Image (tube, rainbow, N blue to C red; front, side):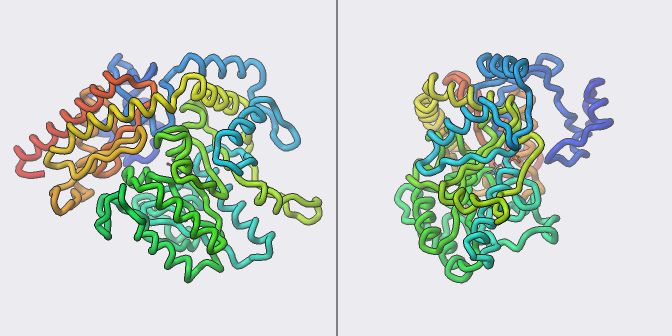
Length: 459
Ligand SMILES: *Cc1c(COP(=O)(O)O)cnc(C)c1O
């Protein structure tokens, strides 16, 4: 069932190796050639329109080809595209760092620039380790991470990840990370409801801390949503109590807000909902509104001070990337933060999120293969199960999510599921009418898939 393919698709397949893909799959589903984007829509070479329900891998905030951001970028390009960032600086980086220090949780005052989410994680891991070395705690050289965590694909980031799909094959190359069972509210081992939960599952972390705290430098966590694992959501109390444990056991807390930062969970940063300040906060993805690769690690005066000394003490943090602090990316990120403020997006997210939650809950809850519809802020997830009672998942070889994804594409909807979880993480410019369309098309795609599966003799 090879589709007819266009010249551009053929030329792509001749040379391009796509990310996170089994390239053989492209025989059946060749790469869709996108020509342009506007608002929540992407347009392919035939003019077909797709609702970008996943914000192009969670990066887009204010729509494709956003006028304000594009203008800021173009103007910056004509003024200064890049300059070395050691010993040199520029307005876009200064303005952005100031603004980030202002809007992130209290106490995060120092901003280190990197290029993408994974490299921000590398920076935080290295900083935490070097901090403890310089505080005469050289035994602190391991990290604690949660099961189902995702922190990126470079080797350090992969080492603290817990999604087998990504790291199993590389296991022999990875750091020796201490792993604790993370929260799992959908299949809660304690049968708690998220809104009345005193986080008994945090005992899994505490047990590990008791045994390993002297060799642990930091705990790394995705605040409120373990995104790549399938938008697994947990309550703020977990984070709040985790921060207490970190203080008690003298272990840093690294908040990886690469996916959840910039309003996704309903507040600017997910940590706000727990009222905590982590020792390190990693930001990327939404930082530039989906325009350019950029990331930052924010940390405290206390951490910064441990590196601040005469040159010959060799305490400096010697980490850099060629494009560190790129002015184009910084200028764009600064524009994004201004748009957030001036166009009151946190309020919009609250309103649109509430609308999405009510509608999606009513549409999906009574579906026989939907185990749960859950939502935090403007991230909504549909967990598909074989049986609602037992919550038995579909075997991954069935690729149920992937099949539904293909049906949805034909309907002009870009969903890109995570295993058995379909999710919505749309750009914030989406209108209520468009939210309704997105939900309806998803529902149709799910129904179509299961109707067909039955015809073929079972899902
Ligand atoms: C995407 C992601 C990363 C990695 O970011 P890249 O820019 O893809 O390297 C790290 N942490 C989380 C939570 C992410 O979702």
